Image 1 (cartoon, rainbow, N blue to C red):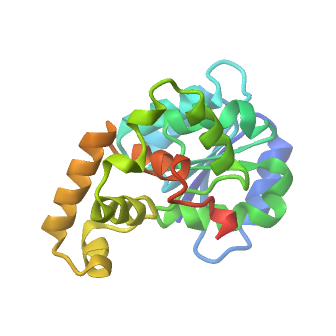
Image 2 (cartoon, rainbow, N blue to C red; image 1 turned 120 degrees about the horizontal axis):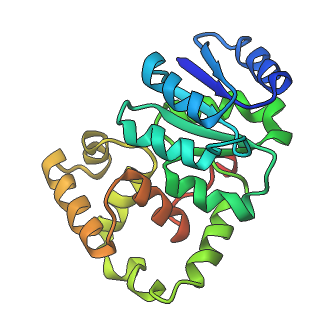
Length: 216
């Protein structure tokens, strides 16, 4: 697993690197101290995981996350920040982040967060589901995005897909063909106005179909 560390504080990068280097199969392939440098190194080094700080001079972590996601290289961004999720979680997810971890928990949770994101799962703070639900409740169009518009099988397909299952794996769980599962997912996403896995994960959290990683 190739990791790019992005933080404007060398001491923080050194600490995160020390934590990661104790884990078998994890290689820190590069470091960046700004958003601009992060985007360029993501392009040239093609890491599997980018550990992203948010508060940096110039291009901030949210902007850098969006740029890296738009590169289409398949790198997954895990935001590791001192900032509170109440203000930064939703912007980070909207920018394409696959996970969000507070630096205060990095010494115990960083490796697990990296492994979860690498497996295709989301990794979010304990109160993420409640926070996103509150934000959803403030949305005037909330009633149009509930699970009540989905069939039971569409709900199951969305739940498994949001948990990181492929169409084939979901089909095995539901005892259906992958093509049938893809049909359920396509109809569900069309009903809910969702476009990609990131949208589905966010909806599943908001709807209570998916729990934050550290609540599992």
